[in-house]
Amino acid sequence: MDKNLIRRTALAATAGAASLVLAACGSNDGTSTGHDGHSSSPSAPASAAASQGEHNAADVAFAKGMIPHHRQAVEMAGLAPGRAESAEVKALAAEIKEAQDPEIKTLSGWLTAWGQEVPAEGDMDHSMHGTGGMMTAEDMDSLEMASGTAFDTAFLEMMVKHHEGAVEMAKTEKADGSFPEAKMMADAIITSQTAEITRMNSLLGKS
Image 1: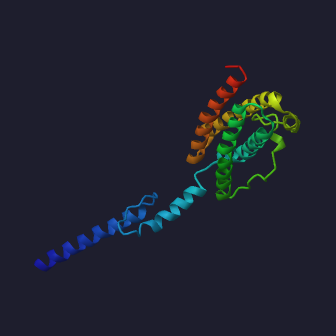
Image 2: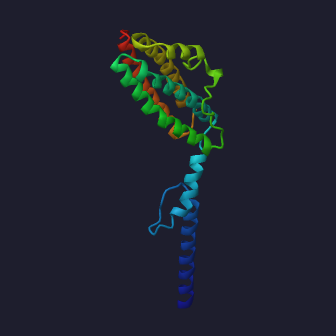
């Protein structure tokens, strides 16, 4: 009788241990549950999968559209140091470049992780001209030829339009996208560029 009791107790303990092992194996949510560092092994593939997945067509469109959009803003901002007269315009242009250069790198990294083609450097996606606030080649030529107060006015007017396009693109991403980091970037773009639009309209005397 005692031997049977011991055997039943041992079997119950074994079953309990097996269920715990199965539960641990089934939990692959990317969180670390171990105490000896071994749990990092199963969580690593989950993290890699998250960086490559959990995105949809709207996320891809956002990244592919925002990269050339940002590049054009950076190009416009790059004209300011040698052409603008207003110190405020020069400062704003520097801030735009500082903010959008890193975002271009981030967006490019997402596309690469998703197995998507990154828009080529120098490709302004002419199909976007007239949409999303993108400037035409003629717009960019006229801005490049301007200087002094004429440049300041043209730069501010064009950048307001450009920012308004970016805000709309970001709103579309927030509504339709699924990649958390892209939606966070979109939210940041809406906040920062809306504030810059208000600032630029103020400089234009439109506040």
